[in-house]
Structure formats: structure tokens, C-alpha cells
Length: 505
Image (tube, rainbow, N blue to C red; front, side, top):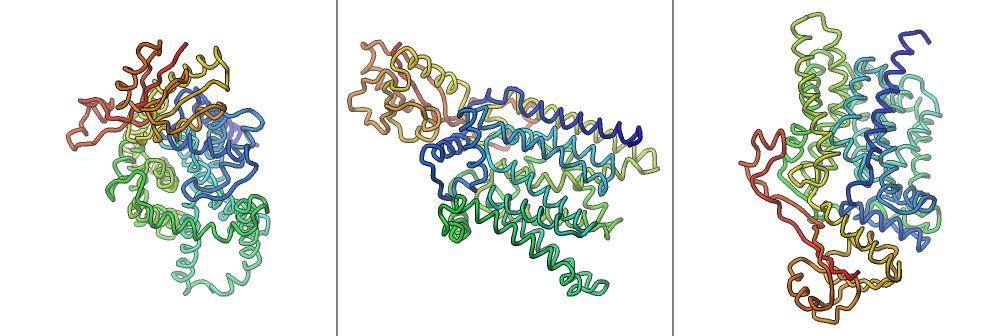
């Protein structure tokens, strides 16, 4: 390896190291989001019962298996729940290195920087959800397909099948992403049928295709059958997923253009240079098959996600992934351009938008990480008072009967969060009528019931502590102004769903 290649490798290692530091720094500071609490409780349930059945609302089994293993080895906590997504997010950045052959060395560096510093990718690398795993597997499938095209062999095909199987075990979006890969291949053969012999090409690569399919199906079957414990579950998983998500009308939603403002606010350099890259490759390099595929990938996924009822900020990462590769490839082209004014203008725009992106990323992940004025934060995020409340529960219980301390929960809507946070307590009574006897040393109630309960408890020495398990804004067009874009300043307080803890010390 010559000196230039060494410096390039060191630069990449530095970016990956930065990505890791950003992802693990104060990883457990933010309280678990609603979805994180669900996933954490589900992983704990696998440990306690020794069993698993696929539930579409909880997504695929991959996350639960590997998290349950970590919980078994290191204990269940916010840190251990998020450490694997943080590692996956770092591996995503590291996986960019092989793409330098296709998008240029400068392009690969910028792609690594985009993924390392992206507000969306950084936030959901610090979040206990399935999406960062699926993004990693999607990128790895792309790299393995490119490797196979360059040097056909069964090894690459088997690895591609393995990774595709893991993708389907991570989240249902994988079915759409894999369809994008397959459908593009078919459309490409149809388009090029005058120049290539499609049937011969398929025949030559049939062993590799069969190998990839078989390996992928084996992985899928093992994961969805709980490693052969439930041999019929894999055959019903896809029908259950289609039935559930095709009729699903709960969860977050929004207009068809939901993801465009999110990308403009958080991923501005990727959006600008990605769109410009799509235009450039369409006009100047129509035969660049990789960029044609990535454009198809982005456009197809945008249409699908815009058409679904559920529109959630975590789905942004799947759109940003192909667009980031296009943007990085286009930046590499700009770096090589001879026109000085074009290069200077592009670098200026890139620098300004990168600063804007990095500032947003740092603020989102380390300053305003529970602020509902951040659109990337979905409304089911508890505030920091809730985390202090759980700490108080543990303090009070440690001075009484420990995990045998009696706890009463009156509001059923608190269960999602509290099933996780009270997972070690053995004497929790759920859905207790507020008009019944409330005599436990720790009592959780909805804030609308709190004043009534406080009057009943005021002579019995209970203390009161308040927090929120949900926070949101009802957005108005006038909210989007320069103060909001730069500092997320709002002219009113957020709404929320409050919880009150009454406790005796």
C-alpha cells in the first residue's frame, strides 16, 4: 500500500471512529421512546418465557434475538438496548469503503461523512428500532450484488442471500426494498434486450441466483420459526404482515409530501446534491447503471412511503440511503470538474449546507433530544421528568422492599412505558380503579386524575412528581419561520399526555 492509499485508509478510519463516538456518547441519557419501551419489554419477554412468535406490529425477530442475547449477558437497560443499533450505525459508515470503486474516492469520503453526521442516521443509530439494521443490510446487499457483477462467484451470491434473509428478519420494509432490486434487474434486462442475451445471462447466473434464494430462505425460516421451535410460523408471517400493514390506520401519519420537508430540514446537502445528481446522471451519464438503479430505488420507495397511511420520521433513513450515494457520486464529479467557478460555487453550497446539517444533527441528538419541536422526534417521546420519575421510583423502592415494593398503576395508557420501566418489580397492580383503595407506596396516575387522587392522599404523607410520556405540537403553517428552522423556537408550549407519581419515602 503506497503512502496515498495509507492516508486515505487513515481518513476513513477517522470518519468511522468519529461515527462510533457520536453514536455511543451519552447513549442512555434520553429515556426510552414508546417504541423502544415496547421493543425492550418484548426482548425481556423472550428471556423470561424462552419463546417467540412473530407479531407484525413489533416487526421482525432479528432485533429481539440479538437484543435478548445482550440483555442476557449484560442486563436490560437503555444503554444495552441501544448499543447494537449504535454498532450497526457505525458499521453502515464503515461499509461505504468498498463503494469508492463506483463513486470515486472523494465520493466515498463524502458518503461516509453524510452517513456519519446525518441527523436522521445518527438519531436512529441511537434509537432502539429496526430501521438502522435494515439500512445496513440494504447497503450490504447492494455492495455484494456489485461485487458479484464484477467477479461472479457463489460466495458473493451466498452472502447476498444471507444478508437479504437478515433484512427480511429485521423489518417488513425489506420486502419492498428486495422487490426494488429484483424488479430493476428485470426491467434492465428488458431495456437491454437488444444488446444482451437475457436468457443466456439468466442461465449463466442461475446457480448463483438459486444459491442466493436458498440461503436467504434458510435464514428467513430459521429466524421466523424461532430456530425450528415453531416450524409453521414462517409460512404465515408474510400473510400476517400484509394483512396487518395493508389495513393499518393507527400510528403517525401525514400528507403525501411528509418526507420532503424532513429531508430539507435535516438532510439539506443530501437533498440538494442528490437531486442535482439525479438530473446530472440522467442527462450526462445515462448508461451509469448504478446511478440509474439508485434513482429507481429512491423514486420507487418515495412513492410507496408517500402512499402508506403510516408516515414516520424513522422511515426517512431508507430514502436518504440511496439519495446519499447519488449525492456523494455527484460531489465526486464536481471535485473533478475543470470549471473553476462551478467547482467553487458547488463547494460553497456544500460547505454551507454541511454546516447546517451538522448543527442540526448535534442539536437534535445532544441538546434537544426530547423536544417535540424537532420533527424528527416522534410524539411518543417522554420528557426528562419522566426519567427522573423512574429514578425516584428506584430510590424509594431501594429503601423499602426493593423489587418487592408494591406499585399501583391506574391508567392503562401508561402500561407501554411502565411495562419496560417496572420490568423487575414483582408486585405491580395494573389498571387499578382510582376510586378503589390506593395504599401502595408508589402510585402512578394520569395527570387529569392527579388532583382528585392528591386530595385523597394529602393526609397520608405522599409526595407528588410530574412528567410526560407523550409530547407533541399541532403544527400550523406560521410555525415554520427562520427562528424555527435555525433554533426550533415555538411561540407556545407543547401539548402532552401527563403522568403523575405519588410516592412515600
